[in-house]
Image (cartoon, rainbow, N blue to C red; front, side, top):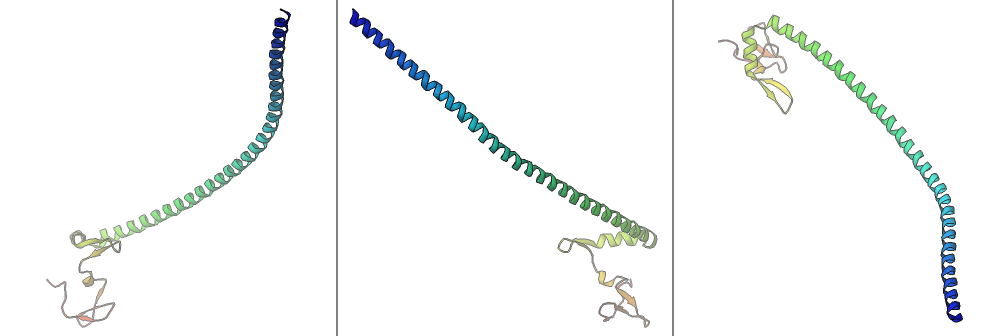
Length: 159
């Protein structure tokens, strides 16, 4: 009986020892974790602080870039508006000249003979080499071209 009691006591002490070892290991681990957490928190704080500084710098750079792009866009917009105003002014002047000095029938004929040249990005008027601005009347009654001064034998507008 005594032997059994001693075995039981021994088992209890072994269990208690295991439990205490576990508890001691747990306490050491907690203490180590606590110390590591502190170290990790410090390291984490340092790393995150560096990351925040980098991100803040990137944000400032992005803001600066955005402001530059906005300024560039504003200046381009202003230039385009000025160009539009100037082109509108020129168009209005040309429309006034056309409406006052070119008969509507002639204007219709010119528009009908006009075609868009996509290669040059301009309008072409068929047979414009015979137009009044290109040819001038010579004193003798014949016509010559301004560019080459080669005489043309017949008047293309006689009909």
